Amino acid sequence: MAEFVTVGRSDEVPEGEATAFAIDDREIAVARVDGALYAFDDICSHRRCNLAMGGEIEGTSITCECHGSLFDMATGAPLNPPATQPIAVFHVREAGDEIQIEV
Image 1 (cartoon, rainbow, N blue to C red):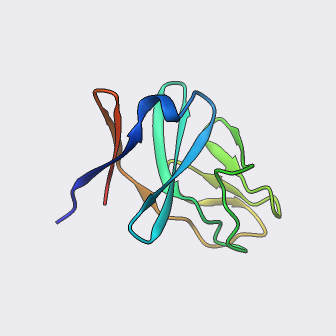
Image 2 (cartoon, rainbow, N blue to C red):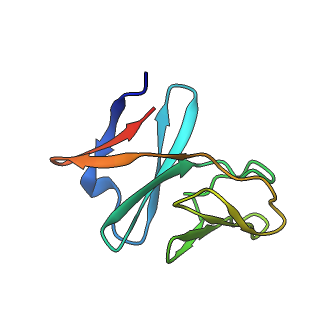
């Protein structure tokens, strides 16, 4: 059964930015856009580059800095090549001043 795990503090994810958190053996990025949080795999499905580090956020999409793949942070869908496979997305919430991800 899935459960919410606290990964960090709310102030670690500023508006318009993404921050990666380690959960077990996985890196999960959390981004804040217009106050809403999005959680998704931090690893691009194309060439395994990190998305949070250097990725550019526009609306609810993030561009991988390595080769320009664009992903929808809400659904994980690739929006342009070279990536053709989606990235995983996760339920995320704020509880007080903590960010929690359902894993």
